[in-house]
Amino acid sequence: VMGPSGSGKSTLLHCLAGIVPPDAGTIHYGGTELSALPESRRSALRRSDFGFVFQFGQLVPELSCVENVALPLRLNGVKRKEAEKAAYAWMERLEVEDLAAKRP
Image (cartoon, rainbow, N blue to C red; front, side):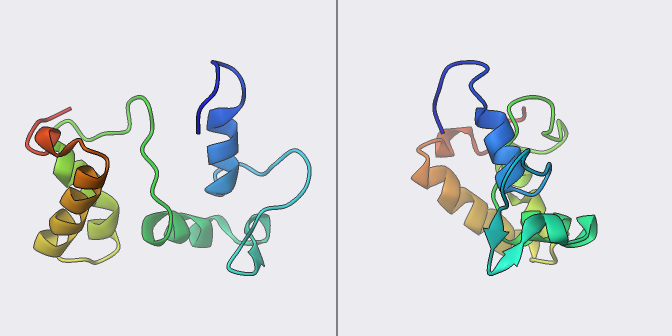
């Protein structure tokens, strides 16, 4: 998502991830309206189905970049090695794998 500062990029992403409801209309995922789901279910969807990297302050400074990317998978019960392998694959797709061992 690209656009000038203040154009609503973050708001759009927050709505799509079920973090905040839209001011108008509805967002459906898998045939279900997100705002109809309890927060616990929306949180579970963010861990299992949505990838979200925040711009500021949501990385764990004690973890490497690849460990931070893998964290939602780990919280969802995926074994460390498998989660980090998947996280590294995403870092490769985004061409940032050279940052894998660095800490935020």
